[in-house]
Image (cartoon, rainbow, N blue to C red):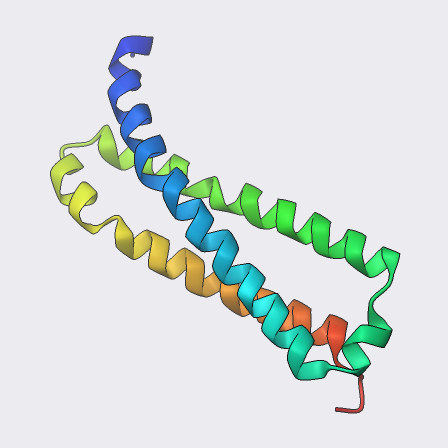
Length: 117
């Protein structure tokens, strides 16, 4: 496969996934914020430089995981099912967002709530 054959599917993937990355990051941020508010004032006392750095690392890892959608997208776009995939790839986004949201909730509650709660 030459580079020109990959250009159209790659451009299409970027046009589809990158605007949704903002939604993805916004949703995960909202979950962290909700967990922080839910655990307040304990969560405020639990916040430290190390915990903030951990949250930063987890945010970067969440975005690395988001990039896994590109592997699936490019594979599907280079198949006979490209048209069908392009209509239903929102399902991959919804499943990925749900999974990331669940992980974010568990990590955030663990970080912000006292163990006795």
